[in-house]
Image 1: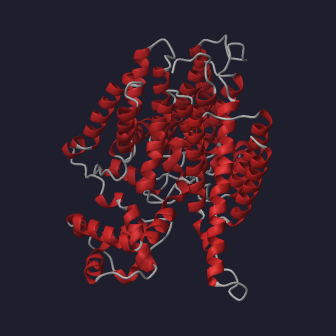
Image 2 (image 1 turned 60 degrees about the vertical axis):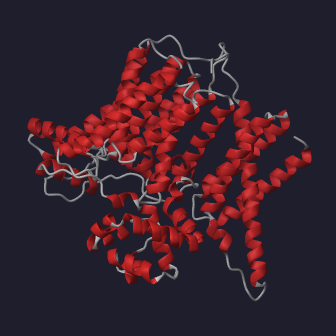
Length: 582
């Protein structure tokens, strides 16, 4: 890299981070990326690192995508109104456009330098590297499982007994008590909750103990899945440092500790996706002696992914299409179990529920983005035709939309439609599809703004939004959170408070930042032509469904599978074997 080019990129990186000082996102994430890119720029310059033409094109592609995400996610920065007594409106618009362009170009420099460094600084791991050896894999699994489970159970019984049970969870518990089920929250997860609640109540005759029984089971499930990932890394013989960092992330990060005993469907879903990814890796890299066991885990985890969240089956389908269209020659061993998962998942989520008399998810649950887009046009004074106004007013009071519309959550709109005339919307899908398209043709930028505000938490730097729950909702079942008074409780609360209020921890809890990491790992494996690219596909597919249908702009638990999988994906993507067969 020539000196003038390096200097120009340094200047662009500084401009990039200076423009983003006005962000409503985590500035710490941008600051971290800035520091990393400056280090990588210097390191790349010193060692003369470069990629092939194809590699450069790939690096520029991922860098451009991530830079565009940052620029679009901060679009309001580039709509500033400066002092009109000092500059004209035209000059103000020109400066905004210039800042946006410089931010976009600067972002390309930021992410390109980071990607270039990752692609060239992590060569294949030699046989002489400091690799873990000497322990039987069964011992590693059992030891990891015991450590994880011990931490989670201590938290459960000494900090938040009987575990966190929120209003959503109470709704599911109510179904197990009444015997009247629906699939708004996954039916099969609700039945799983019911099984362990009944076991706990039968054993202890206490509602709190019943809830704790389910949470103890979930602690064991989480410990087993995390230990499965750790022992797989051990058998693949990644360097010891990576093995320790992965195990530590599972053991000490607050989101994993709190989620271990929180009754949310997102927890077993995130664990199912992790088990799916690990089993895929074991199959394509022939890790372990029992291929049958690897396929069984893949199948079980695939079914779990399909039925534990409403978007799980669609994510599995999207991943299958990607594998089939572009990588079928490299993943033949995955196609048959994948098809079996999709078929059984479809049956369990469709015909099986119908046969059991369980109502399906409302059609409106998939309309988050279109509802927000139309509502934003109305809120900002967009003109509607008489036909459009009448049709919309049939399902929701048109004049009330500006008061109901909330940029970051679609639930108020959904509730208003359900309260007035949801059946009409369901019966006239075609008419509403037409007006959604027609309004979007007239107000495209308002549609873009609405989409950004509704989804930006899943692709931009990160936002200050709640991550985990530590309470039991009011209920009629006698469940309550026991007040604890012990040293461990006080230490854990202090640690969690520190992680939520210290800037240092923001990147570790940022959904968007982890999606950036996941995207870079995807492109990095593509660059090296490695099968590990396949591992990122189902996780990215889950994220993609959130970009289309999320009801809340930055719900951590919706993207929890990203946080369960990245500690595993990082080492297997960056620690290649010498002479590894692609």
